[in-house]
Image (cartoon, helix red, strand yellow):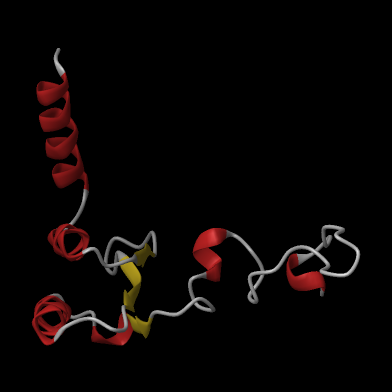
Length: 107
């Protein structure tokens, strides 16, 4: 199997495994979190900042079409920390001593 065929197989599998809403969010390059619930598969949709008007029209269209308005969160570093598996502030090391915290954020 050459690279082109492999890419086509992978793309087909991704499309089959995800919902139409996930496919459209992925096409727009939007980050989201899955809930694991079949009735409401998407828990959070991170709305990016500093995009053009055309992007926001497409974003709003997808959100309205799939009923995700209650899941939209403005994207910033604080609310993406959970995606990086770090503490809420994003720091896991003491700046003064250089030691790693035992708990996220040193709490």
